[in-house]
Image 1 (cartoon, rainbow, N blue to C red):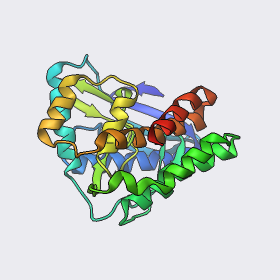
Image 2 (image 1 turned 135 degrees about the vertical axis):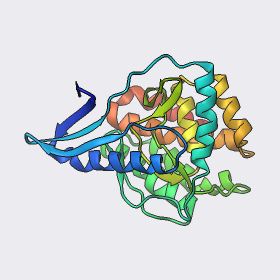
Image 3 (image 1 turned 90 degrees about the vertical axis):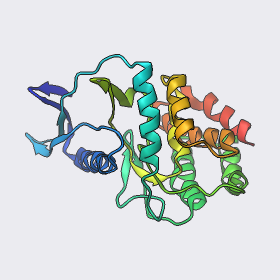
Amino acid sequence: MAVRGNAFIKTGPAGALDMFEAEVEGLRELALASAIRVPAVIDCGIGDGKAFIALERLHFEPATRAAETMLGRQLATLHRHTEKRHGWHRDNTIGPTPQHNPWTKDWIGFFRNQRLCFQLDLAAQQGYSGELQTLGLSLADRLPEFFQDYRPKPSLCHGDLWSGNWGVVGGVPVIFDPAVYYGDRESDIAMTMLFGGFGRAFYRAYEESWPMAEGHERRLKLYQLYHVLNHLNLFGSGYLDQAMKLLRDLA
């Protein structure tokens, strides 16, 4: 990564171009919703044998309660931007991990196949078997239990909304590094809670703008499991205990 003039530039091997192009499309999808500011895209392509993405250079400032309140309201507005099906028109990545987004009418099937079981399969390939797989596959079979009286709308989601992927510029929230798709809005809220960094003002403003549905507490753990499994697959066994705790809580 580098800063050149008014551009912030990320680079990677030429094979990373598809990942960068997906990020560009994700930022543009978020921008079209006119809900939360995103960095402007300057360019994306191959230069000097490397893939790159050049974004508007932003000077971040400390988050304030007012900014968190604004972000909560704006995120609710973003989530009201919906599609007819879950997924997206292209695949992208969650970090460097592939994230498949085929258009799917059934949210439970989408989450089971493209999120939970995909990460469980990756974990099995890396040697994480035994109870992790037993509990994980049992959970996959029981997913309808979590959605008996809840049918999530296909909301536009940032997809990776942790504290490192938002900032404040001129008092206004900015979100970046998305893993965009249309899905259950609760998945974005779950990610904000996983590693901390969002204050009460954010959650209060979101809840006032669009209250969470009954039963969301258990579903939040379900969606956090996806990200914890991804961290397990990316960074190793330091995340195994956290994954197992979530699986047992969900059993």
